[in-house]
Length: 401
Length: 237
Image (cartoon, rainbow over all chains, first blue to last red; front, side, top):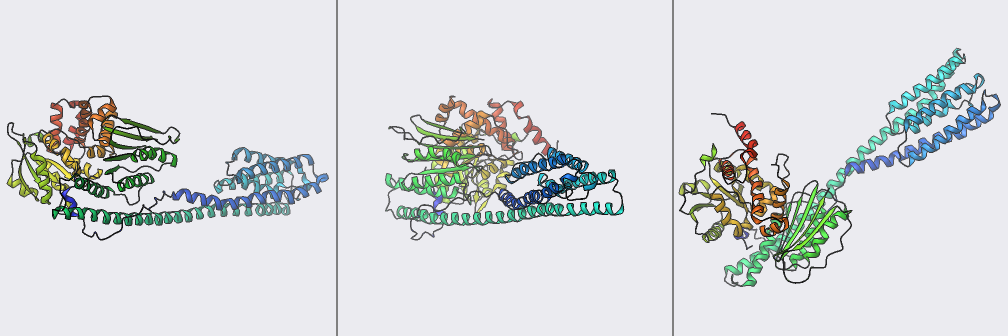
């Protein structure tokens, strides 16, 4: 390694810039816009779910139950009507809890139970109570359809309401209530009890879609802003380093040119090596916003460099996003060894979508091994290798997906 | 076919080298590195490849700075390689994309400028005999090649490239892989030869391949894809 002649090409803008402080740049973790949007949509949908579950249960309890109890003696088979009510109430509570906890509902069996109760209650109310509030399935059942089909396409709900209407009309026909007034009452009842649930259901779906889209836009915008800020900070930081480094380099070159510094002096040679390494590292940094892993390694390299160690940091490829424990198991063993390094160091990172290999090579010298960090638990996903062969000390960490 | 286009080096006389760089101080530096090796002689230098070659048409190897007067001369590199000129590229642009693009264009070897002192002489000597020389920076670029149509490397070849890139010491790689240094070099060189299949055909690539077959580094049947690929690009006479 030597001071390359091409260092003379650097801009001569080096003025009296202060030595840059510890880097303040913080790598911004990638913001997953889609995930953020889904979270917002879920939150806004939650409100609608609470409404749907509340309406179903309150209606069932406050309107359905008193009517059934009041007309109990007039019903054909009161136990069956009441049993159906209890079954649907239990089902509604269980489904509501699952829905509010974001757990998937087994729609087909629940739909089956609801339709069965529909048929049985129509059969059990008797002709006399067919149109009375005691026939609670008229009004309440559609709200339970809503609960068990939440989040599914609207056509499912429409199909279920059609089945409900078919059951009702069949019952009306079989009871012989085919007079114009009865048919009008049936139609009114069906329309009145179906339109509101459909509106709530479709409205909630539209709202969820809208909020998802809006949240996705907002998240993308935020991510862009954050990325731009991080890039701006990185650029600023890099300019400061360039100013500092090229000042050091041009001082050295001036001294050499004026004969004040002796190229055979080991001290001068060491300064040359250091200046060249710093410039090389600056040239090699091409990422606008470093990945958190590269950021950590770069910070460690900067620290070692400020302590006078010529260090190369070469990165190839971009690491995928990695959980913090894995990142730590990749970086920590190397930073520990780096603190103990003398003369020179070479830090490399090779990344692909499924593998990241970080390596630190420093000259070997007599003395004990550096006290390493206790291995971070990465669930056995990161291999750690340390060896010295008399020439070099070689630390390598490797992550496989 | 194209292998004929690369002029063989006359045995018994030193290898003629031409240096193309737009910074005289770099030319002086490279000249000083090459002066340590009696088998090499610098025939001409300058900042324009055409002028330098007019001055020394018999040059066996051209050391070319990839950036001349502020622009990357990959097109010139491709032209020289297609014409059978052995070009060793050296550049301060040691990002993987640039290195792989230089290989695709037909460069015999790529040196990052900071690797010059240690690897320059060996690279030029190997280039003059159409043998691959892979310096650590290039090994890194090859092992991290993300392109979907990259050559398929064996596990051992990848590992040898990776460790060579990391440690810059073939002895250490050999110890780590529990193989001889010679075998390490073979793995690295085989990987490099596979890259003669990437990009468009060039006389220099065919020459590298032909020499690799002659040396027993690769078997002819391993390179079938290259031949068919190359012939598809050219009309059959």
